[in-house]
Structures are given as C-alpha cells and as structure tokens.
Image (cartoon, rainbow, N blue to C red):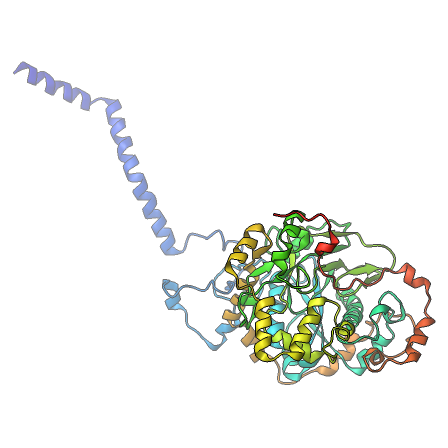
Length: 529
C-alpha cells in the first residue's frame, strides 16, 4: 500500500507546517472575538457601566424628564419606582431633560440663559387658559411675564396662583393704575388718538397699548432683552430655529435688527365641540406672507368659504422688540421707537398661532363683553374687523340652534375633500408641537400641582410697588383714564385734545391696528390654480 503510506506522510507534513498553524489560530480567534465582546457588553450593562449619550450632559443629580418620558410600566425600572403625593410635581423621573431649558417643574431657571425674553399681556381669562399658555412659553424659553389682569384673572382664586409662579408679575387694573396711566406719554400724543373714546375692541386696543408702555419700563428694569405682546389665545411657534426654542430663534437674529415680526397662522377647527383648543386643534391656515401669491389668490374663494376675508380676524401678525431706550408700542401688533424707525425683519418659518373662535362659546363671549346694538352700523363702533361684526350680530339675534348652524358653516372645517385639497396646496397645515408640549404638561400634573401649592392669601396690594416708577410719561395728563370709556366722553374731551401739538401727528407713525390679510380687491392679478 505505498500510495496510502505516502498520503499519510503528506498529511503529517502539512499539519506540522507553521503557516497552517497560524491560519488555524486566526480562525479560532475570529470565532471567539464576537462572543467575548458580547460577554463584555453584558457585564458592563449589568453593572451600569454604559453611559447613554443622551444623559451624559444632564445636570448632576438631575432626575427629570419631560412629560411622557416616564419609565414604561413594562420596564424593570418602573417596578422599583414608589409613587408619592408629590410625584405629580415633577415632569418625569429620568436623567435627561427633553427641552434644553428645563430646570424644575416651575421652570425657574437661572439668569445665565440668554437672551432674556419677556411677554406682556392684558387678560381677563381664567387659569384653564392662562396656565397652559404660560408654561408652554416657559418651555420654549420665556423667563418673565407681565400680566395686566382684570375680571376673572384678577379674582383672588386666580391671582394667588399666578403670583406664586416664578417670573410672573401681576398688575391689577385699579384706580391707582388708571391714575398712573392717565399721566402716560401715549395718552398725551396723537398717534393713538383715532382709537380713543370708542367702545369694546377699540377700548381694549388703547388699554393694551398703555399696558405695553408700562411693560417696557418694567422689562428694562428687569434686564430683559426682548419684549413681546401676546394675547392668551396665541402661542408662538418657533419653527426654523435649530431647536424648538424661542430663545434660540431670537439668539440667532442679527444684532442690527430691532424688531422681529411673526406672521400669524389661524386655527382651523374641525369640530364644533372643542373644549381645550391648545390640545385639540392641530390644523391652521397659513399666513399670506408664507404662501406663494398664485396659491393664495388662486385658492382664495375656497379658503374663505363665504366669509368676509381669508382669515376670520387679523392677519398682520405680532412682533418682538429689543428692549432699548426710547422704545414705545405702536398698537398691540407692533413696536416703534421715538428716535428712529426700527430695523425690522419678517420671519420666514416661525409664526404666531392664533386660536380664534376655536370654541363655540367664543360667539357669546364677545356678545357679552360689548354693549353695542346688533346693527350693521352700530357694530362698526365696537369692532374693527368684518367677521367680528357679523359674529356679534348673529350671537345677539339668533337662537342657540341658529348660532350653531352658522358656526358650523363659517368656522368649522367639516368638508373632508376641501381640507385635503387645501392641505396639499399648503393653505392649511398641521402643527403638533404645541399640542404635544401642553398635553405633556397637563398629564404630568403641573397645572393641578401649582394650583394646590398656591398660598392661601393674596398679596394684591403689592401691585402698587410693581407700577411704581413704571410710568414713562413726562407730560401732564389732560384727564383721567376712565373718561376714555364709552358713555363718558364729553365735548370737553374733544376740545382738550385740540390743544395737542398738531406736528406730533406728522412726526409719529400712527398705531398699527389689527389688519385683515390681502383680499381679492387688493390684487387684481388673480391666478387660477
């Protein structure tokens, strides 16, 4: 068997070859390497040795997550968590904040965060509207709020809660405040005079301007860098920033810009039974400034659905201004400066979300606030915009059933086909971020917790110190504030105003009122789409 013996000799020779031995060892090493790495990873994870990149930069000792990020009930860590009555105070129990400015459930973050932004508003709303509005803006970077309150907002039960929130200053509409504002520089100038001595929306417009004037001084004293006037049915939507942050958005504004304009989007409700607009409305009609002209005018008739204008109410947005010397309001929608024309820019993506007529009860609330007669002529004294006038007349003359039918036809978007068409064209858009943030805050128990932790007593008298030194007037008042109200104007008031310097009307730009978006009559070149 010589051949067999030769074959065995060759095999023994190959097995003893150094190169074959190296190959075998290499193959064995490659086989063992994945198993070794898997074992090491298991050991490190079991011992807690792996640091999640999302938690690496969390503050030392931080145990907070944004609402909705609690451990799942299916997670092993969830079973080790013991609930307590104070759990609802926290926005979560993880190790990483979902938003960059979160420092505790009251959002009382430090003064090192720049720029410092404040919002001023004039409101009579209740906590069910103010708290979601306020904490949403705290989440996106607003640190300070100057609330000029009256009505329900000034009631003891509401005021004591608002006063307990860090960064919130309440100013009550009392006789003392009206005497302060009666010395206002605004009241003794003519750029706002066309709104004086008129009821309802005109009176509110003047009141807002006077409050904004006072808020400027308060903002300057508090070291604020930006000031924004916003109603409590409006939410800022900082789209276009590197993160969902108003602070980031304004931080990136060039230093030579004095004023930033946020075009407004208008809520487009899809049901007539909306109770909480901030968490139930996700569809909005985009502003003219954010649409191609051919799309806007080409879809104009389908967008208005027989209403007087493209938007139900105003369409000229709101603005933020740098807090500088000689800053003044220019009506509720704009700011100005006594010494120069502000350098302004209009944002291409960010917007103000205006939740207007989003509840059926908004029809009757406007009716109950104004004492005008429900006639086409008389409502012009109360309301600046056509839809407000029509809504007031319907609410004052129709039955509940007739009002609901009118609301469904003119406000509610119930036609699925037209909604899809306008969504595809970009007229309508879906925005979910504010809904998600506010729903998360509500589910975490923030609102109920702050109400429960509010002090039992109200420090209402402290408002005097809040307005002390906040009057920017250097002129002598011609009359007191209450005389501006409807039913109290007299011929002597008109006579007094005649003594004002006529030149000031030419020098100061007139106040910018709430304006409707462009209509078909404003542009004769209509492009059918």
